[in-house]
Length: 395
Image (cartoon, rainbow, N blue to C red):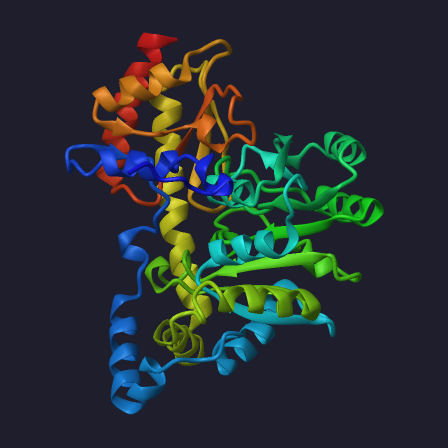
C-alpha cells in the first residue's frame, strides 16, 4: 500500500544525529556524536532511594493520572528556583511542566505557528528545534553567529525583511552545536529588537547550569518586562534525560494555550518523574550536585581541547566553550566536510556534520560538532589522536 503522509511531516528527514547514533552501536566506534550527559554525572543512588520511598509511601499518586499543568509542589519549587537562580518570573508568568524542553519547544511552535510564518534562528542551531518548526510548515530564517552570539545587525535586517516573524529562537548559553555563549550586550539587543519589531523570543536554556568557566550572564527572560519571552528549561542535563522532565516559564495566556496543546499530546508529564525531581530538589543539595557536574565537564572539555591543540592541523579551528557539552570545529575553507566525517567513521570515530544544524536544508557547512561529555577520558584521547592524524593527512 502507498501511504500518504501529511505535508507537514512528509518533508522532514530523520535527525542526522540519531542516524549517526544508530551507526555507532558498534562498541569499537568512539562516538563524539552524542549529546548525552556523562554516565558518572547521574545521581543513581539518590534516584534509587527516592523512587523506592515514593512507591512505598504513596504509590497511587505516582501511578495515577495527574493534572496537565504539572505536580503543583514541583511547579512551586521551580517558580522559586528560577526566580532565585535566574531572576525569572513576573506577576504575569506561570510555570508549565513538560516532557523535556523539546516538548516545550514543540508546543510553543504548535500554538504560535501557522503555515508560512517565519521563525528567525541562530544558524547553525539545534536540529530538534529546527525540525519542530519545520513540522508546522514555518519558514526558517537563519542568522549567522559571531564569537559572542548572534549577529545583531543581521538579526535586525532579518526582522525588517520578515515582518511576519512569530518568534526568535535562541540558545544563549553554550549553544548547541557551537558551544558559544551570547554576551550580555547582545542579549539586551535581542530583547530590544524583538520588542521593536513585534516578535516573541523562545529562549532555550538546557545547559545553563553547566557553566565551568567565566561568569554567569543574565537570561533574556530576566529582562522580560513586557511578556514577550518564552523560557524553556530542563532537568535532562542536570539530573536525568530519561526522566523526561522540563518546564516552560511564560505569560499565563501563553501557558494556557500550551496546556491545551499538551492535553492533546500526552495528557501530562510522567508523574513519577515529577515526584523524583521534586523530592531531589527538596532533600538533596542541588548546588553541590551542580558543582560536581561542572567539575566533570570542566575536566572533559579541557582534555579534549588540549588534545586537539596538540594533535590537530593548526588550520582546523575550534570554539572554547565556557560550559555545556559541545564544541565546534571548523575545517579550512573549501574543505569537504562530509568526506572528513566519512573518513572519521572509517577510523571508527563518529562526529556530526555541521550541515545537520543549518536552517537552510541546502546550506553548506565546513564544520563538525564534537561532544566531550559522553566518551571516557581514554576515548577522548584516542579519538582525538585519530582525528588529528586525519586533519594532517587531508588538509
